[in-house]
Length: 380
Image 1 (cartoon, rainbow, N blue to C red):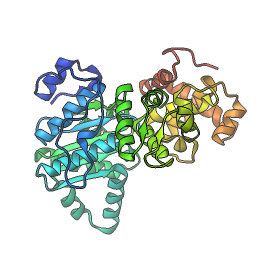
Image 2 (tube, one colour):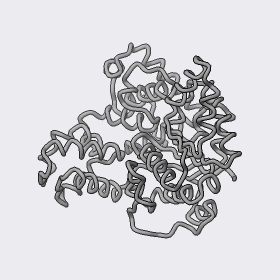
Image 3 (cartoon, rainbow, N blue to C red):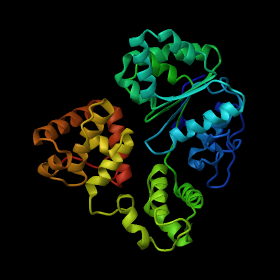
């Protein structure tokens, strides 16, 4: 199958790639139309994605209809919190319900640990029997293998064994594998053999449906006005919406919440950045950078040194100085680093912007999320 990029597909091309009719126009928001769920598994059919993720919906349907055949591998990529892990969990449950007895679903970090442990204990043969004998392999956060060359090589051989046996492979990542330079070229090429599709953050209609579903499950009665205000204020990921409802549930099951003012204290850190509050603009910048790089704000401000985190931290240092107006001293205090470290990070980002289209794309994505015009100067 040719390499496909979601951003290049029009509605008619979606149908051609999937071997089905073009995606029909439907309601603004709809769940994935799949069977309810296997016992104990998540409800994939209730995962709200919206029309902007029509290609993801059709791809998941096709994998359920014909695992290992039409779309193999399927790669779903997007920032943290858009529902990639939930999608994999639900898909695993549906495949098992359809009769696939051995569906392996695991995160890349777990995969890497298993490989290291197997090498250390001489149990590589048993690990290979387990993984290469699976009816389907669903691997989350594949970009985290960037620091484990041995795990990447093992995954290449596992991929080949499963692919040639007609077994389904589904991978989730923070970015299109083409834009993860730390991946082994052989692994990157294999992941790009099938359909590579972006899972976008929920739009306003999808955000409202997620809030309604979660509030109903939590026994909360939210007024129409409050729902409208929350949809506008919580303009982030699905994970942010879920966290908001969990906090509201702390007010008491069955509570009727009418005004946003009633819950502002509980949701202040979630609402202020999304609603355009200017109190801490540097936090908005860090949230955009973290989402674009597929890491958390805590990781950006922490001590981690993995390549995705290091890049996010350097880009954050670069942008808070230019888009949030922080001085060198203020930036140093925010990141708890020396001023010389901040200046070095800025120089590194400037050099990479001149030669690396991936870093330029990250920068434009952050600008767009913050309302800064694309191509606007960022020099301080």
